[in-house]
Image 1 (tube, rainbow, N blue to C red):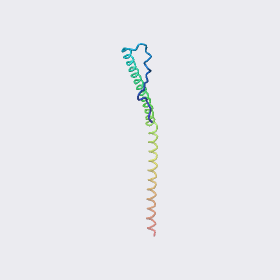
Image 2: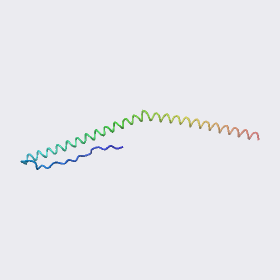
Image 3: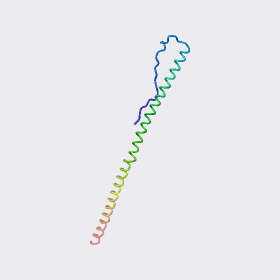
Image 4: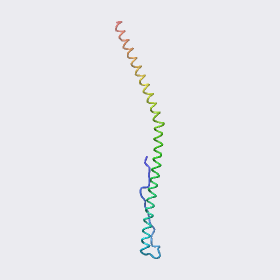
Length: 111
């Protein structure tokens, strides 16, 4: 089956040359902002992956319940029915063999 989910993120940052007065504080603020955006994007990707895995688990549970509640009982009943048919066929074959053997003994006695 396999379900695809986001494993990692890729971010592209706009060029920071648009600042009017770049200084050390704005550089630190921009770096902090980029780190916060990356952390938020990673958290969103992890949440989406978890949501998809939860959905797959729910589907798998439904399939398992269908197997346990519907298919396995039907297959067990079919197996019991086939075993009964085979047992009856074996008994009939055994009876035929005994009858054939008995006829052979009678024919040998007559001859």
